[in-house]
Every structure is written in C-alpha cells, then in structure tokens.
Image (tube, one colour):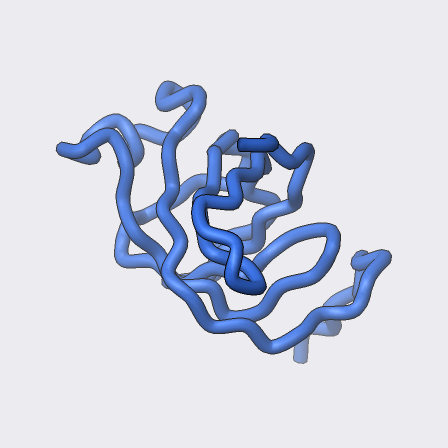
Length: 102
C-alpha cells in the first residue's frame, strides 16, 4: 500500500463549489489548449489557505499554471493563480501562488 506524505502547511476544510479554470500557459497541458470557451468548469472538493482539490472531466497535467475563479464566503469572482501539483484520475491538487484582487 502506498503511503502518502502530507505536505500541506494549512488545514483542509470541506468545500464544495463550482470553479472556473483558465489556462495561463496552455502549452504545458494540451488538453487545456482545446477548451472551446477558453475556460472550463471544475468542482472543488476541499480548500485550504494553500490550495484546493478539484474534480474535473478535463485531463490535466501536473505542472500546468492556471487561474481559478470562484465564489468564497459570499464574495463573487474571487480569482487566484496556481499550479497543478498532482493529478489522480479525475482529481487534481492546485497550490495557490497568489490572489488577484478585483
């Protein structure tokens, strides 16, 4: 059985919500190049100060850089930059790199 090492610095909280994903450097992940609207939707499974776990139907590649847009605590269109750190089937982990103020 594979043992996973916990690398988070902050506690995960259950969070379910729609997230819009915009590729920043599509060349890192060919599947992101083919999004017809320039973005696609995913669903957050959990959230921490450092990142989010997403469930998506689009095949993603670890190392891809993305912009995420979602609603948090009643604030619409919160935007964050991040990169995909891991991918397992339809789940992926995104580490936040910065918050974009609107």
